[in-house]
Length: 274
Image (cartoon, rainbow, N blue to C red; front, side):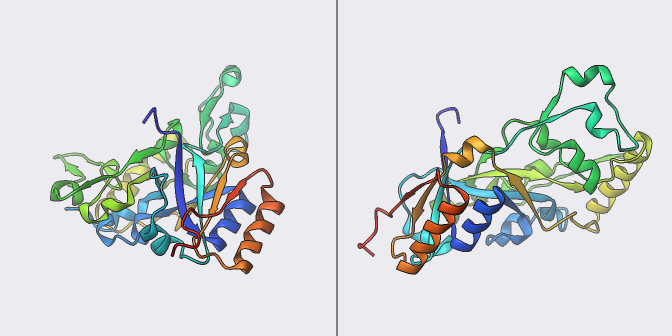
């Protein structure tokens, strides 16, 4: 992964407009993916709704199937961004003062905790993702015919306790999708009220985990938007689809001029060929 510098995302102009205006990348849950197999496991129902992903490819060569499936030949774009383009936040104890629970002392203010989602937002909106503590949310999709990977057993049930290995989902796809050369950013997000004493949060987490095990818990939201860092946003490159119409070309040019005038705009290498 050290050699990987940039990734590519095929999409339509409407989605491009939202990315440029909001400076965000949308993560959708596995139950919204075109591959219906992805959200399934061998033992837990509805668990894919807690796994949020954003799909990219490392193939710098333009792909006609990818244009057709995810962008269209006349009204789509391909976005190029550096890998892990997300903004990093500094979290201090003082940021959590308005909440009931603050596990950090004032002496820790000189040593901020860095995350991809602010602690304050999780406390305020009632959700939790352990992966925000990582600098790297990126995974290379493994294409396989192994049913143990496509339908993993994620429940480890002991006599007096159990664990759910949600991290086993979202990383494998059926070998028939291999043409995508997909890399994806993954966030596992669960509903959890952290704005309360620790003991109550632990109790609530156990209750939520049990409901997840039974397939009864609901996702906190249908999607999550991650903020792009200024550096990554400014070096964005956008390729127009091969048969882009004149009107759609003007729309993209105006979007770039208004929201990201430093972005580089290019014609498709397939222009005039298909």
